[in-house]
Image (cartoon, rainbow, N blue to C red; front, side):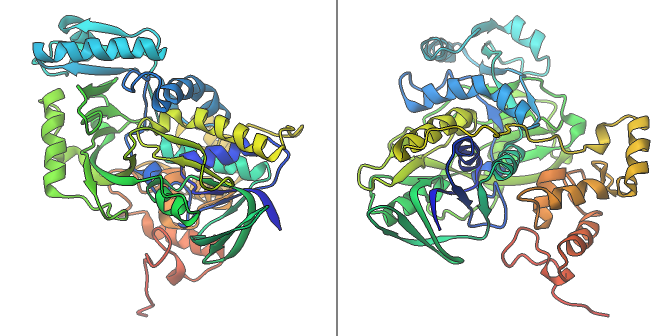
Length: 478
């Protein structure tokens, strides 16, 4: 079989692009080298929907950020993904930083960002009482928001699959053969043929491009380290609080998450190893110290529940790389999609799918396309009557597996059997939040393992944390 389109990479960009392609009367496949969706940058970033004032006017970052942020409420609603329009603040801590706020304000106005305003110290403290008294002013962007990026990518993939896109996991592209009418992707699981290939491979997108003979893309892996705090301190700030940006990025932020936690970070260090997601003492101390500059008295490591790092795909060109390759006409690059990539993703996906469909001459839309991904059951949000009724229908919802987050066996089973469902412990964690509480899976992981083995009909020893060789158990002792 020759697909019309093959999308490489099931991060937020690849997943949303596959979903948009599913609207057209064409055949598409989404391939991912890992065991699950959202295993790269998408599962480890700031989860911010930027308003769009930071990017240089006229750049792809500026254009797609503003368009994507405008689309975000509609797309997240269709996919039943939590989204909160909490707004953002860029805080100046000295008179010397005030010109930067004015610069960001003017840049945002040029980019088409609505309702931007510079707040006085008094106005800022009224909005955020826990902000440092050293603050002198802030740029307020009420259109900014927060979203769960990995849940967003999972939902988009599920919706793409239910609308006819094939999803293949553990499928790594090793090489390509370009023919006149199609390209053969040579993978570890067999050959995949497609007329157009969409390169959404994140930090590895330059490696994919080079397989096609396109050496114009140069990606640097920019590591960012984070602290995630317990829900007990999730109320410390309501807005996403930034400091004035630097050439390396938007700096260390303090933000609530859509699930009620508090997130601080990231650092910004360019590294050579595109697989290095380790955390460091130095990086985490930098995050803490800089976050204390914004919120000096509230944040304490005793409230931290985990630390992590993610890699951003920084293009040396400085802007998003979007479009057909000049050196390989069948290759459509979506590369260098670093911040504000999550914010821009819905608009990038629409644009990319339209260009690919036009290239193929397959612009007719499906009559039966369904943009809605049904809301998964969230037992913890039901009232007592709804809980009782659900348990009566399916007793598995009466068994609590994760006590920290109140996640039931029924929810875990649903996540495993969903389209493109969970195949490992971290996959269940991202879909249900089992293991994301204070104990970080200390009590529930063994139970999740048992459910995965039972539902997938595999031995306990074959259940992994995150695919590959990350097995939890290696054999029986008795």
